[in-house]
Length: 124
Image (cartoon, rainbow, N blue to C red; front, side, top):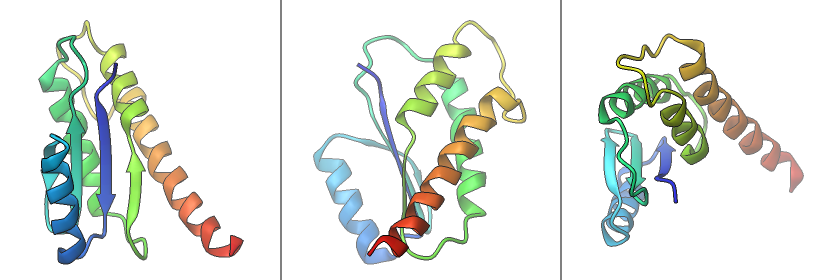
């Protein structure tokens, strides 16, 4: 089973406290806990992952999340993207977040989440 990664952007303090409490109860680890950003990981993987690679990916996500100006809370499930990147880069020593095979899936996940959020406003 894969590690699970969940990202929330534009959280106000009250809602952020609720999510932090939920993540603690469900045994998630907070990788990013900043002003309006939460990235949590639930470790389900028995295989060892390269923590240095994960750290670089988290830095990339953090920089992208800080630039988001979406209205309301934006939720992005990054499980598939991060696990795929970690599998592809498993045998490499160093990775660079400027590499397209690292940044592209993350950018696509951000774009998809924003589009789905915008489309849901018009469906009602």
